[in-house]
Structures are given as structure tokens and as C-alpha cells.
Image (tube, rainbow, N blue to C red; front, side):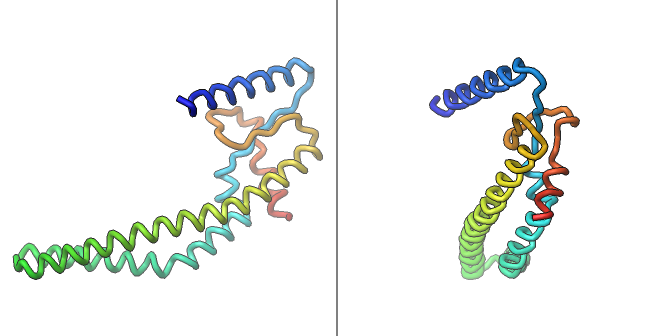
Length: 162
């Protein structure tokens, strides 16, 4: 309920802010697709490469362990030994725990890297907006936009220069 009220407030706030700007005369409004920037900019690619380098080895080991588990389970179907089935279940449980830890650590590191980038993106959007004389630039939660107001590629170019 609280989230719903907060969303309604933000929606009304944006509606009135935008309508006020539009009534004021010639207004320049643009959007930036943040996810596209995070994937396509130099800084975004570098962050993704850094994460792959940092977590790639562990991910590869987990993939190998998943393959081993599959082999163990196939063998367990034919072997049907209670001792072996217990060993398979223990391995499966350990693997599941390792995967959960990996996912949590990866998501935490990714969020840290993306927050660094978002800080730079905000600065670049601010300076780009002032330089190009935009009245309003939105960059999150875009459901639909006219392609004419999408300045993501221009902001990416400015971000890549920095």
C-alpha cells in the first residue's frame, strides 16, 4: 500500500512538473536508457569485463560441479546404493549453498560497480543537459518514448569521452 502511494505521488509529481514545463513554451525533453548505457558504454563494458575476470573462475568451477552432479545422479540411478545416494545428496546440498553464495556476492559486486557508473552517468547527463539546453532529461523507468527524444547514444559518446 505504501509503495503504491509513493508511486502515485511520483507519477503526479512528474505529470505536473512536465505539464508545467510544456505550458511554459518551447521545452526540450529527452530520455536516456540507462540499461543501454550500462551495456554499451566503455565504462559499462569495462565494469562487466572486471566482473567476469573477478567471478569467471568461480563460475567455471560451479559449472564443472553441476556437470559432475549430473553425472553422479545418472550413476545413482543405476547404482541405487543408499550410501552413494547420500553422497549425491550431500554434494547437491553443498553445490546449492555455493551457488547461493556466488549469486549473492556477484549481485553485490555488480551493484557496487553499477552505482559507480550511475554516479558518473548523472554527472555527464547534467553537464550534457546544460550544454545542450534541455529542460528535462529522464533516465529511469521509461515505458515508452518517441525515438526523437532518446539521447542515449549522445550521452554514451559524452560518457566515453570522459
